[in-house]
Image (tube, rainbow, N blue to C red; front, side):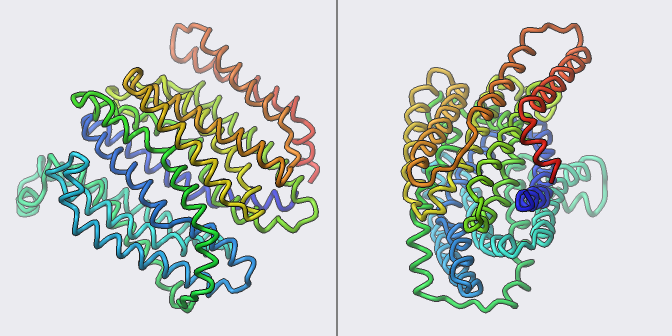
Length: 492
């Protein structure tokens, strides 16, 4: 239980940067969905979807490989230097190639007049990629506070630049006269606010890279060929795993553009992307949990009751995410205020995406079996199956159901990966998960959500009051059925 408390503490600390970052970042969504059209916001969603795929390629599983060999070899400094230099050199080559071929790439993805978008994204990806191993090193050293400080500095800088470029400058231009406003009129393009979003991200990511310089000065950057070979052998299956995972996560947003009629595609993409953001709390928790859990899993491997710890952890995870699912859906009217009115027509995808992310989180827990047994190729196989499901279902459903088809494809994909990982993991690393409890917790959340849909309300306030009562009843039910787990935590 002390180790679980440590994980909870680490999740809370890493969650601080994730929570504040996501909340502050999502506060940009009301801004974007009010100053940009659905189509323009669709361009933002599309470019960041490409970024998610490319960042997986640029880091090629090296982060997890770093954790594995920094722990087992006892040569953290050499592993750090080798992993960092490997990513730095490959990312630099990527940056030069993208800049050189930016015009060709922009034409290929229907942005012939905007090659600058391609260059901005390439710069952002370069900085994000080279920051990966320094951030991982802070996690491995349990320097969570420093991790958070650097993260939040970049986040606040990004948001500050967004506010300056998207709100403050147009305000000064439209409401003031003088040398400053005249100068801003000569350089500011009011119809080019999408570019300013990307520029803000590039500058903030680059500034975070500068903040790691003291870490580089303390550690000698040595490239060890033998260590590099071990890292790559371990990491390359994770590249396939990560890339397939990214395909499962973002390919639907890319395919919407090409599988829907061109006159509505970007608007539909913008609506879907905005509604995806409403699942903020689930996404925040899973991200924070992953930051803390990965090094925790490896650290617990040799402990006597490690399997019981992993099983108990799964139960706590399912309880937490089920509460998040139900709370979000019971207060969905409040959550939808996050996006502008034209984007709220996509509300029907939110419960589907929330449940999909819950399954994805369970899959992350299950994935420890192939990471701890060094069978990472199975992670690649499972993710490839998920990618095939994602591609096939999106191609079939998007022309028929639009973004609703994408949401259902995401749910089926993550559920399939979860089940496959569980049944294969039982053979190689049988962890005694309490699935009856987990199914009960999720089933009750879905049941209470369905009950809330059948009740009609005269006003929003009555609806919120009744839904609050429903949430309280659910929490009491969880307390009753899961008392053995709760009692264990209270006793310790």
